[in-house]
Image (tube, rainbow, N blue to C red; front, side, top):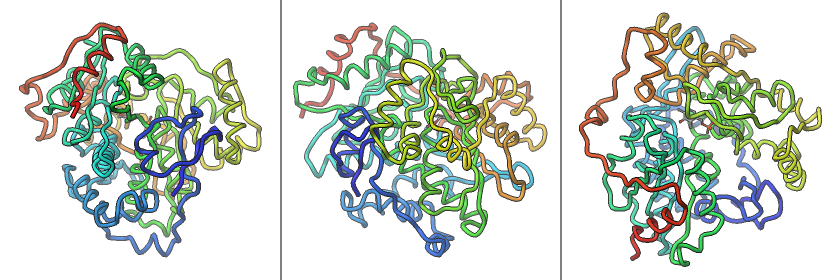
Length: 466
Ligand SMILES: *Cc1c(COP(=O)(O)O)cnc(C)c1O
């Protein structure tokens, strides 16, 4: 399998290189040159497979000879064996023909574990083979950092440095990062905000000379193709559990960077019958404004009760735009260059073709907490604020009640106790057993100034230079 850039001006590369780099050299994102396509008959034959066996069927064409089949199977067994539920991604029914797909049974209680548990293992496998080393550098306001640290804690060839804004992430989220032990794990609390952290990470990727050529940076945010790939699997898994592929499904996806929902779009293009995809955003609604009015325009950032979806630009949306433009990289490049200067639209027929599959909704904090309360009163079931946005959008946008509507449950409610508290329900979400002692564990992090040379100096001194 070869991968090409959405901006059309970088050479194609294989899976290993896609895994080890971030952006393509022309500034685009990598996508597969062509997608594998599965017949209904083949998909039907996967009924009853375990999650990791199904993951093998769906992902092996993307990985092909970078990881031989037996090794890949073993890796997937290990990856999805760490989840705290036998079904890995269980479905919970919340109304007639309406479901939540619980993607928060992994070590850090958010769906990002599905991809990052695998990414850590893939990286280490490929680096062992090549006898190379990488430094992962990432900025986080919460979920990505902890999932990346958990995913890389056992890697021999990876050092991970995660920057978070000092005293500006929630206690649960900080502790999920800083209590993980490992000499390759480095938590940097930066005296600044999330944007400062992100800016320093971007600058470091742009100019890696501070590493002296001895190692290279690798990305763990959702521009990394391997993350999207891993997320395709659970669409197949959910569908097969509810009578697919012999009936189509609708999915509602709480999204910010368009990563998770793009995976659903790919599942459909690979042959899985999906008749509707609902883009569920919070008040940072650039995607909703585009889908409802064909206008793509950045606005200022709002802080909401669903912080993991607080974004201004939606990086993976570029991957959809590439397809909507007939995979013409030059057109995408021009469009996005214009988008950085002001609002843009795409040709009407292209926008309408997206609207055949996608609907969208923006849900504010008040509707979010109302939905948490509503579902709790109806079912004694607690939603986290991100999932609540998905459920609200699903109900507002549903096209056909005879089609199962599945909302992706992206986080465990115990990760976001404030929203639950604000909803007024008389229940406090408890951390699952494997994290019950989180607040007794010892933390380890270094506080550093908001200063690029100081951060880079710390990295140079602390990665295992072996
Ligand atoms: C990261 C995250 C999202 C948004 O994911 P995208 O890849 O931007 O679609 C939604 N909910 C939670 C809980 C998250 O951690």
